[in-house]
Length: 328
Image 1 (cartoon, rainbow, N blue to C red):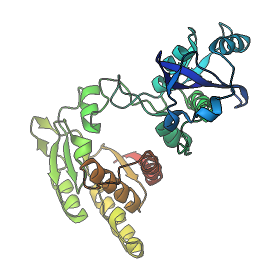
Image 2 (cartoon, rainbow, N blue to C red):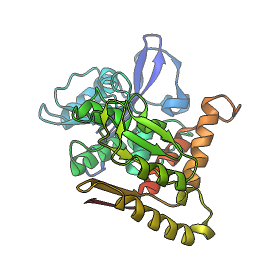
Image 3 (cartoon, helix red, strand yellow):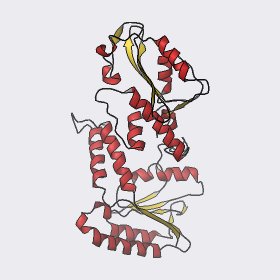
Image 4 (cartoon, rainbow, N blue to C red):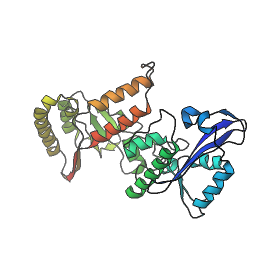
């Protein structure tokens, strides 16, 4: 895995540091490089490179290329993030590469790319310290770890699916992928818009779990606009919105409610019940802060990469729960 830091010279971007690590994370090359032309901006806030670091450096780009040729053959697989920038900085062409910005595609598809720091927080569960700028060793190591994780998890890990479906809501994806699903009737207590946006789902918004149950039972087996409904989606939210001291009683109520809803289903209905974390307050608080920042209501306190990584971790933890699938 390779990562480079660049500065701005009179010529343009030029290499100032290169780091290479192997698959075990061992640093096999780490060199500071003196650009051939005068530096006009060290880009310290991004690169971590300063005038003092380079003042006694005599290593040139040609020296770096010579050293790379000792480590890299035409069969070597080079790993990096937005690797084209590193190859341009080194002025080399290489045919076997793995780019983590491609390996972990952005939900919106090309040309969007996920930031390396985001991928590290999301999939490796660790923070990258950027206070003193980037560290090329840390970045190269992170890229290698992401590739090894992908090899362990398989090619579909962290891939949103068909690019035509990227950014679509869950129910819209289902409609596009399964033409047999003509109409969908849905009940929900709150927060269901992300699941139904762009779909032909019939939305019935309810205020309480009791109302969700009543609406669900009343509509089971009924027809929705365009034909018989083939999917019912109901969200019971009381457990996730309650105080800890209320959970015991609410669990019993929810169990009884689910039993009545399942008993109302037509025979042969494929039924899926999933329970996420009962405490969603941290997720709700972080989402509220992100929304406030996006709407400009948090002046002077922009939403940070650290908070985004924290939200992703909180969401993952909230998704830990139980699920069951059966035929009613």
